[in-house]
Amino acid sequence: MLHERKLPQLEAKDLTRIYVVKLKLLTWLLKSPPPGQITQAELIGKFGNKVGNWFWKRIRKPATRTAFGNAVDALSLKARTNMSSAALVAAALKHDARFHSKWDVAGYELEFPRLYPDWLEVIKAVAEPFYDLWLTGSGFATADFRLKGSEMNRDRIMKAFRPESMGICGYCDGSLGDVGTKVEANDCDHFFPKSIWPHLAIHPANLFVSCKDCNEVWKLDKTPMGKADIQGLAETYHPQLRAGATHIAVTATQSATTPRQIKLSITDSTVPRRAITLVEALDIEARWTNDINEKMDGKGVSVFVAKAVRDSRRNQSPSLADLEEIIDSDIDWHRSERGKSERSFRLEAALQYQRTNHLADILADLS
Image (tube, rainbow, N blue to C red; front, side):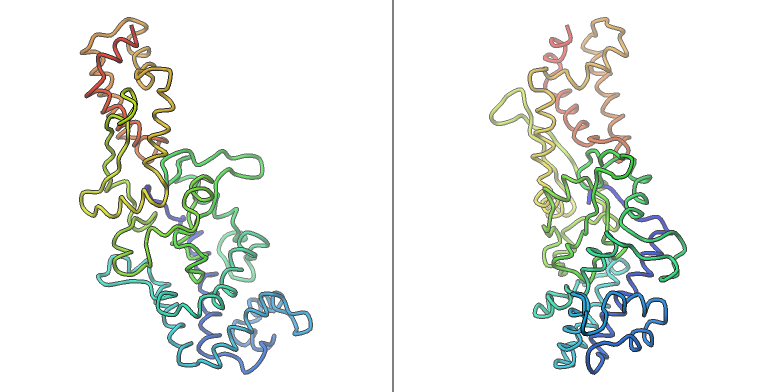
């Protein structure tokens, strides 16, 4: 939400191919549901041999029907008994699938499940396995889905995001997490939570890499976009379509309880509500504030400039003018490193506050 992130073109195109198949399955079941339990022949007729057989392996004959197969049959049955409503739901899913190209269109909003809440559970049962079982599990084979790259799975998605991320979490500006021999200490986040918008699970503009803390502790299923209506979409940042880094201002003020500590605030002068939803979703003001204060605790306010002073003065005591110049240089560096070095926003704000309020204290610490 803070820094711009998007899949490289090859991964985005391959994931789109799979998402289109998913959307095709949902709209078929809703608009032209089979007359009974779905058969292998019907799947092959609709999707061709490779994808049709791929689905059949995951549905199976009635005697050995999988949970996914039962979900497919349940959605088909509901559609057959509610044809007019099912057609509206199908139109809503296709409408929502274009959100990435309609984001800045006046009046655009997501329609499902807001307009059709009684269809959410049956859609979810068919849509979520595309991520929960297959993208994170067995993957999507190149030959079956005519992909241009390697097998599509969660690991490929995570690795594709890594180079442009430069080790920075796009949500909180902290570390994205280390990369080990087989696993990475980061996570995949659905910007529109799949528990509420399951039809957008694995959508290329809805799947992003974040640090584990952001995904598993802070954001979870929170919805900075509200109900994804006109107002909700206007009042949120989006990792690909409206990154917050170019809109926010971060300021530091003195802590109300501890004079030598600070409080960080995040604002957006153009659309104030966007900064509020960012903070509410990620608790980012408190996280940044506590991080800065923790670094200063017991070390004095000079902790963020001590190395710069050593490097520039070679252990000579700086003058007040020297110190101002050093801090100004550090502020400029952190500003230039936004999105390229972790914690740049909070460090820039903390240094600016220290320059304005604590030069004498810093000088005393360094003496």
